[in-house]
Image (cartoon, rainbow, N blue to C red; front, side, top):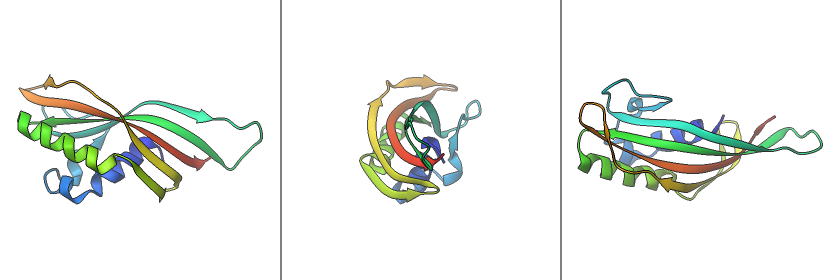
Length: 132
C-alpha cells in the first residue's frame, strides 16, 4: 500500500465523484492519449528511518491527482469533488496502511490537454504507516 493506492481508494469510495466519473476512469500512472479520466501519480516519498528495526515505516508521499475533462466546466466541478474526497482525511486503516492522514499540497494551473481537453492537478500530502 502506498499513497497512490490510498488516494485511489478515497476517490473510488466518494459517491459524488463516482456518479460523474466511473471507478474505471480513475487510474494510477497514466491515461491513454485523448482518454478522459482521473490519473493518480506519485511525486515523491520520504520515510522516517528509525535506528532500531520496527515492523512499520512511517512514510509521507506527495501524490498528484490530475483530471482530464471534455469541458472546462467539467474540470472545475471534478477538481472540487477531488478536493472534497481527499482533503483533511484521517483514517485508522486503508488496506495494510495504518494511521493515515491526507492534506492538500497545492493545486496546479489549468492546462490544455491532448485533443482540446482540459486538465488540472491537485497534489496531496499522504502520511501513513506501512509494513517494513
